[in-house]
Length: 115
Length: 113
Image 1 (spheres, one colour):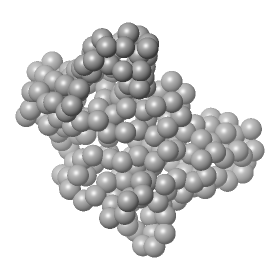
Image 2: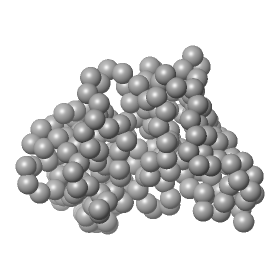
Image 3: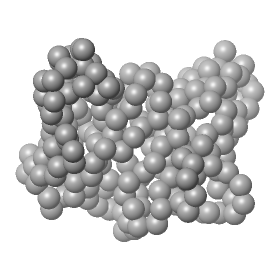
Image 4: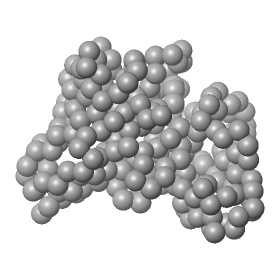
């Protein structure tokens, strides 16, 4: 079953606006990551937030994590047409003892940024 | 430093044939993961391998699917006797030791006729 559930499923905004995407998950996690996928391509890692962190920034990206609500949000500020893509949250479980682990992905959010 | 490479990018098979998907991880990466993506869906984990070892195959169907990551050469995902339901995009990812971040290849799109 899917661990992550993103919402909205689709988002259309004007270039320059901010885009906010949300992800909820069901079980405990070690980390939560956000990935981007352009149409027909592989996934590109955007940002990782650990379970003991509440907020993280990377360029125009801001990620928050609320472990009590089992939710995360990804904010893209000053969006560009090139941000048009699908965005996925992914979690790794605390049951993994090693540093490397499989990821569980949500279904994704389709973001369209209109020029 | 080349990224994760997958080949072929597109593969067409008839029902009952075998499909072999190859993945070369990034240089220096010793961990390989395979995921499957159906249209309009997220990625579903299939298998996690290190060199010559399967670490976690909890997402692999019990029959017809197998994976390996030999000491030399690429990782191979093998699907025997393909059926139409196997049509999907198959993504390989790799990571270095002690890392949660995974680096994805461009995927192999399998179409079963």
